[in-house]
Length: 310
Length: 310
Image 1 (cartoon, rainbow over the protein chains, first blue to last red):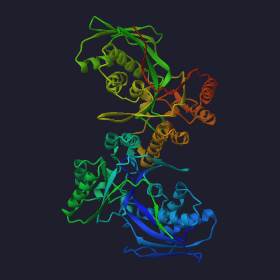
Image 2 (tube, each protein chain N blue to C red; image 1 turned 45 degrees about the vertical axis):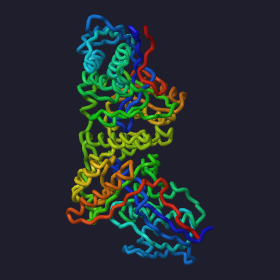
Image 3 (cartoon, one colour; image 1 turned 90 degrees about the vertical axis):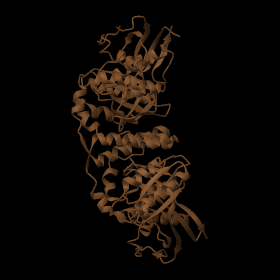
Image 4 (spheres, helix red, strand yellow; image 1 turned 180 degrees about the horizontal axis):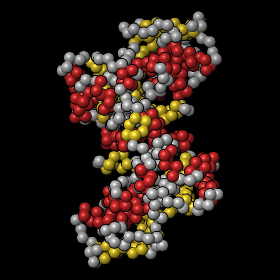
């Protein structure tokens, strides 16, 4: 059995268009890189080799909290060193905390002889989300763990469905350097919506699922629309409408808010379109003196993975 | 080219569980039977050989109104005799008017040399629905025309997606002999719903679509739940909760209101279960002195079809 594993754990886009709170997908870049190693102290030891500030207290770090949940389920006492060497920027809306929780749980599972399947580890990673945002949601942890598109059909019991999708699906994600507090993004949501809007939304989500499963890009494009959350939350993201229009004009299948923002994602069926959109997105933010990071990658069909072991 | 065609046009279940207003499916029984024949008068002539009262005025009969819409699109003047020999009971919630519109349009299209594909004829049949209920909805006409499960992803533009489904899917439909006025069933709906309930509903609909397309009966069963419309409308249907519980206890994948009621449908993956549910449903209604008709059939994969031609 390995003594250590180096893990790549991907960023994820949640709240995909009409799939608020239920649909997410994994991307190939950016991602966390972390090394997990057994130790003999019976305790967690967090090491941060990135430039991003991370909690070193194992009770406050999502990675160790998630691994602890797994150890409890196994009724095992085991210490681990968790060394972060690359970290998705927190608060960007692309599943930074989920990537850490998922990466650590997946790594520890490797070192313990794989007692769990991927789908069974989502619930442990969700304990990291509970620490990070107060509720154990799965819309980032599920795709980070399982890859591709995942639907959280129900929380009680936890039912996660992988949704097959076209192999040539490219994602552009832009992270403008502004802060949108998750608390604000939540507060701004309306508690009540019209039945009429909800019907439009669930027709679109059903169309998106069918389109993904049938490789029907026309259907994906006509369904990738959020009439409920995006109109409300987009007001927190400067230039959102311009960015979305530019992406659609350039040939994107769809473009919406990633997670609770401020990141914005676009899906395309050609790498060249995805690259072009990346350039346009950055230009639009630059025009109002907002810097941004932008990432182009295929939808990641695998999810978290071992990069190296020893 | 044929001079006449005899058509079978199936009943349909709309508002399938979480798919209110967007998802429907065709069944094999009951259905309309009608003969369509060209005449030389340039006019419509409706003949009713059933025991059910039907409008004979071509401007008030959904069948002729729907065919007229097709003729207008073709810019053709042609008279037709439309002879009804069997008719789904109107107002039962299983797409009686849609079956007539779809059957007549499909028959006329055959006699005109098939100028239209099935998917392109839905919009003509919808004109029959507009006459019948004031709005041109497609959730019964689409499955009656195309067979199987169909999703109305959008009305503008009209986008209808066939949803592949398992071949061994059996439907029990019970029509209790009480009247629920569509107007009442509409009036009782709330205009506003909570975002929380809507998320549950669209997670379920997405799960149902994925379950149907992947032949995953466990997922179908966990997703075939309507938390928004059924709790409101079911109060108009005596013994609804008992019927639903009996169906689920007997092994149904799901059980909910068909259309706007009062019919109730259950889906099962075995003929024996569907038959058993039929018996239980009738017994429950009989226990409160309500007679009922009950139908068991496979989900109809074809939709409207020619029975005979000459």
